[in-house]
Amino acid sequence: MNTRDQFGSYLLLKKLGEDALGETFRAGKVGRGGLERVLLLRVFNGQGLDGGRLADHLEAQGPLAQALRSPNLGACVDLGQVGRVPFVAYDYISGRHLGALIDQARKRQSPVSFDHALLIAERTAMGLAVAYETRYQGGRVLHGFLVPQLIMVSNEGETRLLGFEAAGGLRGSAAHPLLKDAFARYLPPETLAGQPAHKADDVFSLGVLLYELVTGERFVMPPQGPAALLAQATLPVEGSPLPAPVTDLLRQSLAPRDQRVADVAAWHKAISGLMADGHYNPTTFNLAFYMHSLFRDEIDRESQEIEAEKTIRVSAEEMRAAAAPASAPAPAAAPAPARSLEEEYGLPGEVAAKKPLPIPLIGAAAAAVVVLALGGWFLFGRGGGESGVPAAAPAVEQPATAPGMTPEQIQALLDQALEQQRVQMQEGLKAASDKQAEEIKALQKQLEDAQKARAAGTTGAAAATSPPTAAPSPATPAPAATTPAPAAATPAPAVPTPTPQAAAPPVPAAVTPIPVATMAPRPAPASQMKVGDLIPGPGPGIVPPRVTQRAAPRYPPAARRMNREATVSVRVLVDEGGRVVDAQVPEKAGLGFDEAAMEAARATRYSPATKDGVAGKMWTELKIVFTLGR
Image: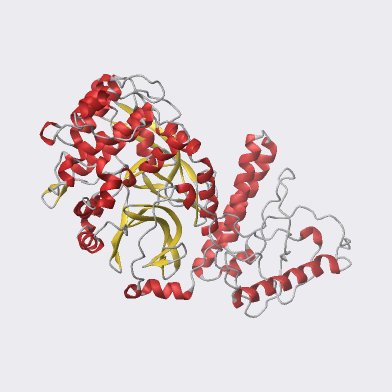
């Protein structure tokens, strides 16, 4: 399939890769309002797959996808089939699958460090253990097809395991020559023999993945068994033998089924203890740095592509296709041989042309031009007002508001005054700050009056009789005026009250001359807040982010053995989508508490902060409590 193709209700934005399982895309979910959400789309159209069998399997996996929720599992948001081509869609993950990471490390001759290898294996095992502890249809949830192409490592150093929904169907095709050539070394012999899934199957796969990560070598089981293989294994950078605890864990993982580590929960406990005993303390921060060193150009290009994709407009034909699933395209032709991610990456195609400006908006713009022209004539076209002041004389600081302003416009001025006062206090301008306080009080009073008037249905009359506000301090220059608002006006028929988006109060049909010195040259500016802007802190019109889904923290093994508890305060930056994009721990607790707290904080979801109803980024604090009794 090509990008910009429609696949069911998805618009394919970027082809991220291709392997024996099929193709992976960055895709936009198309709804009646256009592109609604960007997702990671896994299309299972590999030549060796029994697509019909896998599609039938996926039909029953919806409840399982909803049951599996963990920071180390990809969040499935949709699954199904389009023309008998099965697919699974996940929350978008900016990163690479583990197979691509290993290939790039070999290509760049920059081996995965021992710490990074342990971290990736431990987080993968944690995701498997969470699933194993989940009860579904009377049993435990197993993966059963654990291969690198279904393990994502994000650019932020997080590990996400995919494929639980499809793994049961993929096992049925495991013996196909194409899939066997690509994935046989990661699967236990029992899977290749067609046996049912067993709790020790994923243990074998974890052992293979850990071996390839710590040695940098392709796993090939010798006839003599794992002992002969491990006797020759070395660390790629140091050239020294593997640490004995790692060798022991690998030997128990790669053994015949009845001799393996019992299950993934036991395996996760074993590797966590190994890391604690060896004083290994890998961090997602260091892994993120490694990812950026390996994929710097690709990550930069992806950022540019995503920005360009935000301008895409969906055509009416695409909208109709999204609304009619029955007309979805047939399965794609067999994929070409797998190519590297670098070959796959390219600049996005031309985005669709922007829609023409709506007629009502053109009319509004024309009206604004007329308003500006009238205001300019009133200020500069007349030789002077009744006071005889020349038109070219500099304007005198005037009250902050003008009659006829809406509560939203007054609120915008109040927010501006509060921000000016904060800056003045920081700079030590006490006199200016005190002067600003008077203006803030007056604005607050006028806001109350305007809100009461609106509630009574007489906003215009109440605003016209509200008292004048104090003049602002010279230390806080007012923004440049756009359209002057008269202090008094003769009644005009059917003049609409401006909306919060209006650039200036309405100009009456007739005005009485007013001296420049008593005019209000500062109309209420439209809110300058844009979606995604940083909201500096508490204030009028600001709603802070609120937790909607709290992630449970992972208790550090070393702290648990030492019976230590802690409460860690994490400072998090929540973006306009409610996701944590940065996390900091100002006061360190040690023993792995800080890393575990940041991990839980990054997985926590929020309702985003808003200012004047516009969503933006905002810093907030989240306390993570580690209690042994939990």
